Length: 331
Image (cartoon, rainbow, N blue to C red; front, side, top):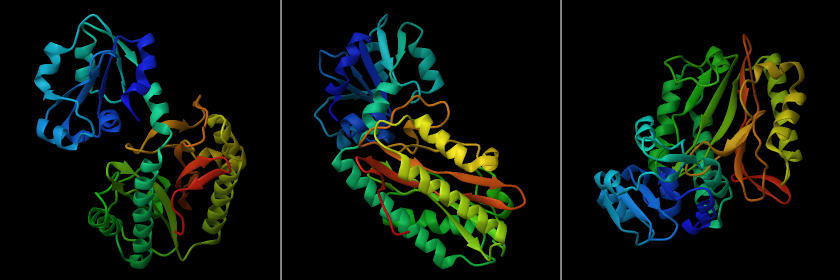
């Protein structure tokens, strides 16, 4: 997407200051360069980077790169400055608002980034394919006695060798640990009669994937019933979602389908994925987003039941005219 796609924001801002993944999205500049992009809608955009050499080497355009220390003295004061509040550090946010009126444009940028181009999808499908092979690796090494940390270490190494590393720290949670929503891998060893949640994602050329699978080791009848219920809800939302549907409506559909078990599902149904693991749209009870064709997001219902275990399944997929289509299959 070209930066000019944001020119309509000139109605409520005098200029834009983008950072992080937003700069990478519009210019190609690696976020690791610590770059900021300023544009006043009329003159040429300007880049200010902590690592000038990296910014110049990774940019897709010929936008001139300046040292980051020049930003403070060159950025106009007493203007309406559009910023993505989610991407700014607290320190930078406080500094900017001292002499400027800050206008949050996170939703505007998020809507643009939510609909993926063919090139973005190609990259994301590669990240998803690598993630699928990582799940196959887990299935190969999974046996009673292996620890959560051992599994996580194998995944991390695999992502580094096959892609550009991991999109986020892997969640590998078994038994009692699987009833928690987010937990770091521990030295706990996998035992028979436990569920094992593996929530992972590879990164390729800056783009992330996000998938979750639940593995069973000599499961109990109650665990099998739980898996069956979560898969039933998962299939339901994938079948019912359509372009133009409100995100909160889809969430409510899943909540209702879970019935009395819904209280053990304390998180949202999904979220956008792209250069960041969590992007627009959020699919939860508070969301006012409308799901559109071309958006890439996750669907991840789950139940975390004390004394039984946790079960969660998640796919990253694209919303098409015919519905939700996972960007990778076969695992």
